[in-house]
Length: 280
Image (cartoon, rainbow, N blue to C red):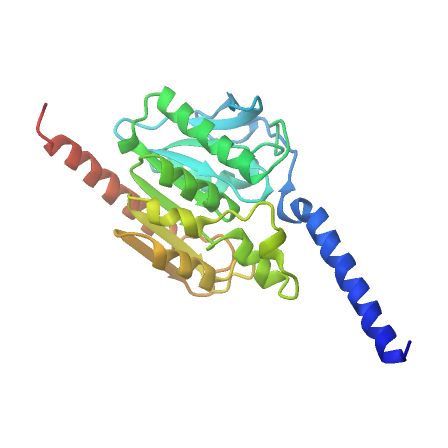
């Protein structure tokens, strides 16, 4: 075998092995499950209670709940692929300070929750959280679905299947496969990815107002992916581009007031529309 053929053969072997490794360990590259479970009493958030939710497939999820003040909506919050609920406390405090209720679920395999994360599993976790919100008396008019990063895939799928007042996405993607393809351009990741989170196939089924916020300097999920998803969304929709913003911008001082104003506007409109409907 000539030196060139040997080199090409060697490169092919390395490529195939790398592709196999990527396929086998892909979920370890997608989910960074943080096992930490903080004590709600030490979280410093007034009225915070820890719940245990059951999923249809027998898993038990930890969730944090803060009751909404009278007339205010519930934020049904879905976190990203890393960290734990305690890492979102600054955001949770902003919501609570606005009088909003909060129901934030710790995905399976993350802090205190049983099981291991998969796309099917996380979507089931979202369903369990939505049912818990309903069980606690929150109707669709008072539920605002909020997702960050990977959690935007869960929130979008949930909004496509259920009614709610509004959908808020922080650092959203066209699909997780779209992001992975940009990270590993030499590999056919779209064909081997087990959990592609195809928000692009769900967003057109969302019939409620949509707000997307995205940092222009996001190195994790390029803003181009978020804009591509936004283009597929139905009206009414709003896109907030944050100059210099990196990954996850909803909690920034220059962003959260705009998010709160937007939520209040659409929840108020939803309530007004409900009250104006003729009695049957």
